[in-house]
Length: 294
View 1 (cartoon, rainbow, N blue to C red):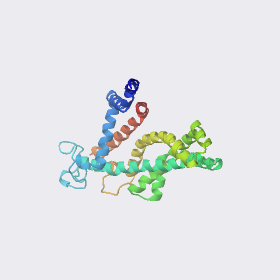
View 2: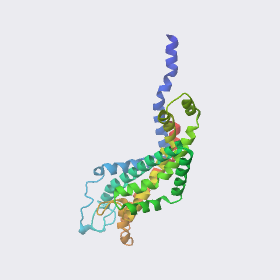
View 3: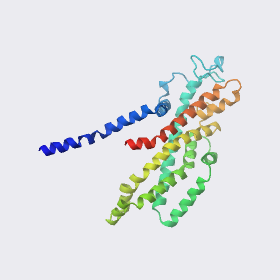
View 4: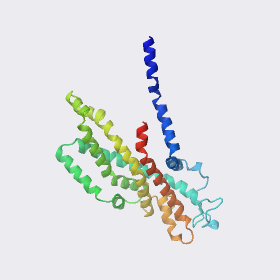
């Protein structure tokens, strides 16, 4: 009995692993102010996307010509536009379509690219070669140019923008997934499972996928910042949400005619896009440090 109690006591610290990891994560954030600020920026942007009423009680579509083109100041921290609409309110409500489209685009790219890479990694040699060549051709085309080509063919609208940006990133995700599947397939535990007669779908679900999707998710985090910029760029070109609905890229485009007299119309939404994209990239760079704590 004494030996059992001693053994349990010796193993007790191991059960505190999640607590130690949480403490380590907190120390990591506190020791890196840039990372902490980035997390706060992303959380604020996501909150604005789903709960804009927490930041402003104004109507993003309410015009007031008497207060048009007011510079940033009390009551209007981002100023007003040419129709007298509060720009801060429009930027807050613009987070919804901008970030939701980004999330859908990245999710579509991860799912489609992951499936394509999985098929390539498990397929027979000739099919793998065909898929690999297609991936290489798609990677040779800049993703923004491919997104623009796709959205031109599909038509404007937030759904089409999400599909275009997602499809443009499929090749990158497929390449990562294919490489990981090929690596895992030659692992000793996969070969052992196959030698013991495990079914192919069982090996796939229990051994290949759990050990292959990790790098894919890391790349997805890195791609989110790029997707934010791509969605804003397509919105700037007029392919996003239809006016007068606020959307970050469209807000920048609407203010370009007033650059000399009302700089805030492009600067404020442009800085918002840049801040969110940089914050996501900073969090993605810390992925390795977070992995070391898990």
